[in-house]
Length: 199
Image (cartoon, rainbow, N blue to C red; front, top):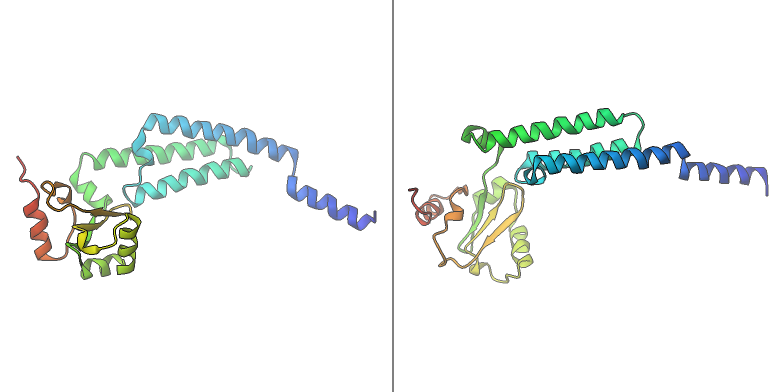
């Protein structure tokens, strides 16, 4: 076998396997970091991984980024990674604790759900503001097995970017619609009148 071919094969094997110490680092540090994240999430509760707003989504992605960084690079020590994870978890816990107790902070942190379709009629202003097209609403209806928009009481864009579709308008008081933001005075009146009065 020519020397050049041998050198090329050795170089390719080195690229694939890098070094034995790097493999050990990935397995050991990755496992410890994963265990630390599991324990931390267990301590902080289910709310930590929920995706009710943009902040939740960003923090969830950051957890994965920290884990990947710890497992694949030697530039960040395990202690640094765990400290970064602890800071994120602490801030997330503090923010959710504050939003559950303060309406002012809750209004600053969380977006309101937005009504996109009411009684089969698209809410054009709301859809324009949220940059949602009619075809996207139709796709959400089809995903729920609904072929006719007239059968839908409401389509709501939730704070996490998902669509909620409400049917059976004659069932109950529509109390789940109480916090939905509408841009139409007519629809606003419908939502408020169909919600139960506070006791």
